Length: 75
Image (cartoon, rainbow, N blue to C red; front, side, top):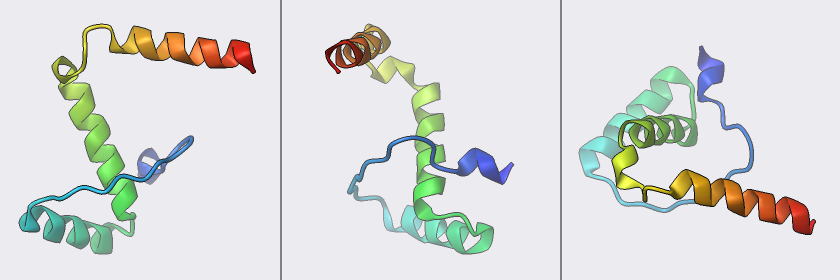
């Protein structure tokens, strides 16, 4: 199960501000679970995105796959 939290594929950096309580809990989770803040936050954000597809433009997935196809063809 712990492998479910590992970062897979390319990564990028993101600097965000969170409420102090959220930060404290994230740090406590990191210490207790031995998973990194990045792994915990990445998993939480993936779950949020999965549950809130309504925050994305209607054709977001189509745009992303089209963009990837264009990059492959030009390479």
